[in-house]
Length: 172
Image (tube, rainbow, N blue to C red; front, top):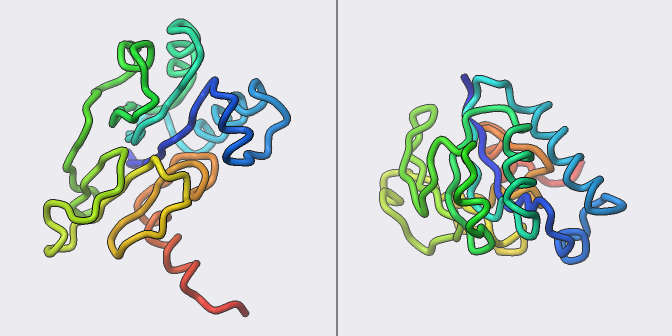
């Protein structure tokens, strides 16, 4: 079992195509592309923490259908765009606004929003968040795990940590 993180999928939300310049010709292609990418990265027995803004716009039946198609045990950390249909969908293993977990020996503080400080920061805890769509300058030990900065599939902790190292390396 592997643990993955993602945020800001915005299934059914046409704004994601405009504001985030996602490379899909239309909303149906966007949603299907995200589902396929998710399932290519996540095995059925894996765990996924979705850090908010799962869907905005589709009726509850469509949200439940999308959720049912996605591999893994899915936990939702609620975002500002997660409405009643998302929150009530039966496919979530848990729904909450905040979580503190440990993965691969690392303490993680999970919220939809980025923090300036968080529990355990002085002891190496990382803050994983969404909401900013890759537009917020990160603080040390803080990572935006949304689909815009991390690619269109959930990612594991090693890839999250490597994302910062890649950006810090000089060009070859």
